[in-house]
Image (tube, rainbow, N blue to C red):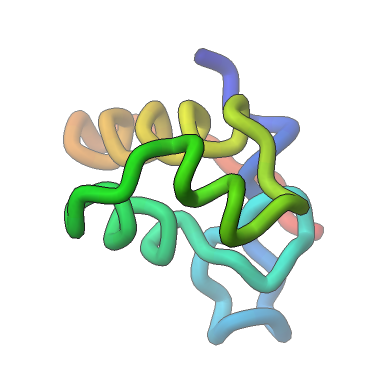
Length: 75
């Protein structure tokens, strides 16, 4: 999954953490919700500005972080 168009780091937003499409929702937020047992559909119901591809991008980003191969764009 190519997440480069969905995940960005903006120094002034959310403390420079990776956010989704310029929203104030971080990758960490989404991963936390998934870890707490929420499904992608439940997350989207709570945050309709998110798309399923955003959630998959968060998972791909986390996988790349684990491998030490993260690529993000500054916004």
